[in-house]
Image 1 (cartoon, rainbow, N blue to C red):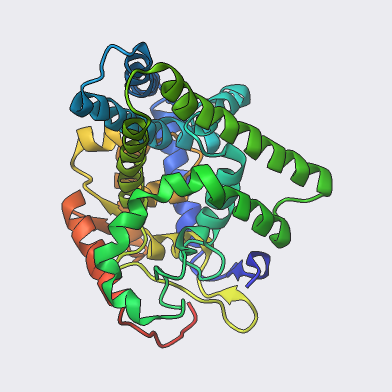
Image 2: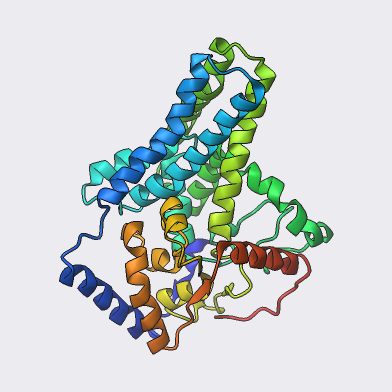
Length: 368
């Protein structure tokens, strides 16, 4: 289904978001606060880049060659890579890091530094995922290889009964897929969907993809193999360990927000209309977790507050905890669902339960 054929209701439950936007706007006005990043955000930026780049310097120095310590450096880079993605790139590519577009664009390209592509990511995440959350055929975050089933409207195969067991391998290699083939396939698919318009723009996108991939694999693999006095196989294993670390972290942070038992998978009616307004749709398809853990929230870029992020993606994540009370109170007032798991561990467990259910579940198709 072409994503542009799907529309949200302009009449059902529209007052909720009007009131909520006014209240959130009033919060920033009365507190005299900017909706963009603050000193905490800048400190976190330095920390995450340091966590990523410092181990790399130690690796290239050739001074650490003991295998366990060597792999540990790469795993630490994997943590830094996840931190850059969750805490810096994500806000920047939403235009939420700074009021200055150049800063957002510059920091958004940290996505390219860690091997993926900011332009492809904005199409997948900002447009398809944020607009059409959990809508089969439109939300690219639940568009998976056939061996996985994240939507009840995907065809079910016998092997899906066991996906809750083997999904961890695919989570681990997910970022490696981005770095190699996935984004090229996405580029062609997005062109077909009309998201990339014009032959010149498409060629530029493919060229940019290729050049950034060459840059990434050059500094990440070629240079260590050339200059670090350890076997090439140890570098390759360490590289894979780094990606597996990043992949597991990113997959769990994002998938526990939507592929959950309480989250809906709405379908359009025969006119291509989703029953609810966009904001209500986001409330029905998104879940928070671990709202009381400030340290955890700080480390993962506030993405335990996924509800707030989906409703206000251009507000920097450092403000999510404060506005979450406004969102939850307004949701209660309008009798709108506000999903939240008490802990991240509970969210992971419920995500596993949902994967187990999707491996056995054939839905009755309803609109809404």
